Image 1 (spheres, helix red, strand yellow):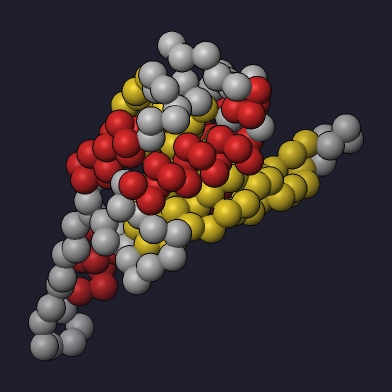
Image 2 (tube, one colour; image 1 turned 180 degrees about the vertical axis):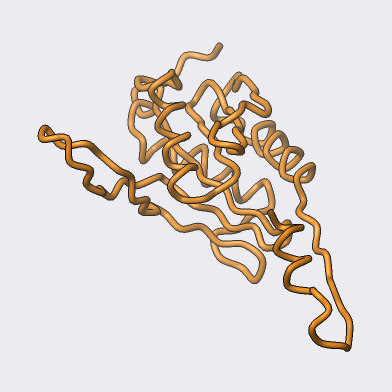
Length: 176
């Protein structure tokens, strides 16, 4: 593992020099006709007060990335060399995925990238890759692009010219 400068202990530095570069190299430009990023995406999550009351608070995930070419969205949560990926980061991502109704999430620090899928109330690790040198972004971008290529969503069209034959019922049940 390569020795990193103290700059990698700053989340903004990791975001700019690793994550944003990785997304661009993976074919997801900041703003285009088929993709865009929403930085500091707000997610409302519940919190219990000292009096056992449920209140909703706003948390911010580092990025929501919309990939319209694959019909998927995913969250990106960034950690630093000092605040590495750990159980707390994984629970944080699972919470964001749950309350943002987003299926995929990426956890990344300068040493590791993990991709999770949220289904049936649980975030499951789909794949991960160690980062040998965070200054060499291309291998990380290739890893993310390869994963995204495996989860391309399908489009199903239901058509009939006659009304009242159960198209809506069929579509709702297929979606469910």
